[in-house]
Image (cartoon, rainbow, N blue to C red; front, side, top):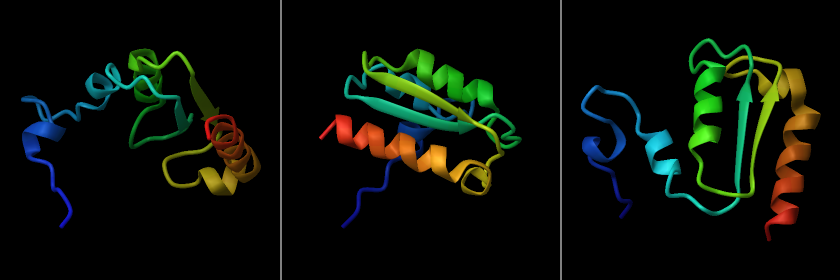
Length: 90
């Protein structure tokens, strides 16, 4: 049975996702991949996630592209970053 988080675990009182708050306690290596032209989740939110991540080993990879077309615009860079990250953090 999968745990389904309560709304209060995911959203703040203002209805905003609490991801950046949660990342303040994440100390494991962290890779954030975000499209610079994302019109759904603005790139500045990816920058905020990165800034709030407590991990000392963290990376923000900014790719050209929007919310759902990163593989179309930068597939090689996308998978290279994941491969390098996983290889370094086994």
